[in-house]
Every structure is written in C-alpha cells, then in structure tokens.
Length: 292
Image 1 (tube, helix red, strand yellow):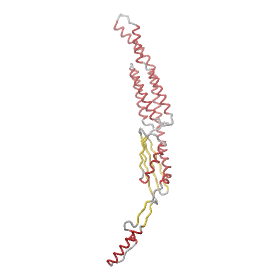
Image 2 (cartoon, helix red, strand yellow):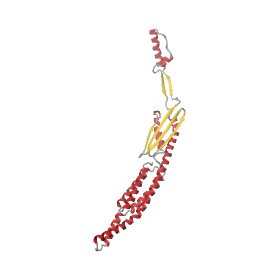
Image 3 (cartoon, one colour):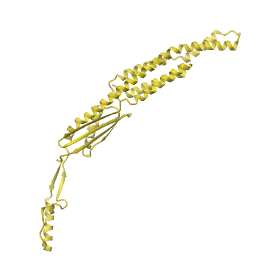
Image 4 (cartoon, rainbow, N blue to C red):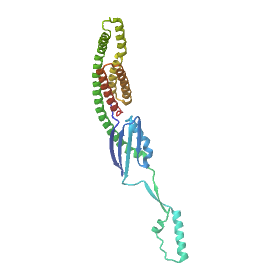
C-alpha cells in the first residue's frame, strides 16, 4: 500500500493521578529516524517506545512528544533522622543552660534544621506506567498511519494518472519512429537529386545509408523497457509494504530509457514528446519522495 511519510497523531490518557499527552508527527526522510522527547523519569521507556513505532512505520523522520502531569503525587516519603534531631536538641539545651535563656525549644524549630526531615523520592513503577502509556501511544501511531495512508492514496492516484500519460506518449513515439526513417530516406533522395542533377543515384548506396540511419535511430528496445517499467510501477503501487525506494529505482530506469530515446530522436515532434515524457517522470519522482 502506498503511504505518505507525512502525518500527525495525538492521544491522551489520565489514570491514577497522572495525565499523559502523546503527539507524533512525521515528515520525509531516507530512513527511519525517531526522535523522542519525554519526561526525565520516563527516559528508560524510550527503547520500548521506539520499538512500538518501528512496528508500524518503516521510513520517515518521526518526532514523538510525551508530556506528563501529576495531580496526586504519591511517590515521595518524609523521613525523620532521629540521630541528627537528638544532636540538635542537645545543642539547644546546652545553649539554654550556658546562657540561662528562656527555654523555647519546639518541634517546629528542630524540624527546620537541615537533614532532620528529608524527602525520599520513591522509585517509579515503570512497568505500570508503561501499561498506562502503551494504549494511547498505539492510538497516536494508528492515527498517524491512517493520515499517511490517506495521503498515500492521493499520491498513488496522481502517479497512476501520470503513468497513463507517459504510456499514451510512448504509443505516439512508437508509431512515429518508423516514419522518421521513411522521411529520412525521402529527404536524402531529394537532396542527392538536387546535388547530382542528372547523375544516376546508386540505389544500393542509398539503401545502405538508410539502413545505417535506421539502426542508429531504432528505439524498439527502449520502448519495450519503458513500457515494462510502467507496468512495474503500477504493480509496485499495489504492494502492501514500503515501496518508496523501489519506485525511486524504477523512476531512474524510466528516465534512463527516455534519455536514450531522446538521444536517438531525429525528429522535432519526437523530441517534443520525449520532453513531455521526461516532465511526467520528474513529477512522478517528486511524488515518490513523499512515499514510505
């Protein structure tokens, strides 16, 4: 199936006090290039995200943006360091007794001292987070792929139209090519008559010259190969796999055969048709750059 490399997908989820928003966009690229931006505490999930994307996407530059909001934070715990608290309390008592000052030692006072109460961050349960994240990630990927398929269908239709245009032009070229030899023979005969006047023309020599010209101008093989490439392109567009690189190769071969036909063309009308074929091939090449 023809798929474009341009697309966008977005999905979100909220569960257990967490909310995730996933956005994925892709553009043209020679290979699969995945760039992932996600919260630091989820970095270890990057490999799983990359593999999940690779299941559905073969080519393109893919940017993934994952944002996280935590509404009910339950992954931290406060710890009381009794040893340090005891030392602070002893120091306060010593100050009180030494200077005979009013005793205003309180819980809030001791709690404010460094390291008496520390906040410990609990380790993230990444497997649980992945079970939450996996669903919307696949949803965003599917939306992206759906957009790429719709765009790919439009590109396919345009390419098929241009293939038919090329085929029509090739028919004209194939029909005209044999007539060019006859026209050359008539022009050569007239030119010789004008130059030689009453001198008898050597028919064998004339036939030899025409035969040499016909051999040099023969484009039968190129026509056959060009028609074959058109069939290959249409067949490839129906394949259910990544086809961009294969189509790019076929276009190169089509362009090669067309150039050869152009170099052998000894007729203005043929040359114009060849230029039209090259124009259609170039438009196909531009469209193929967008296909996966």
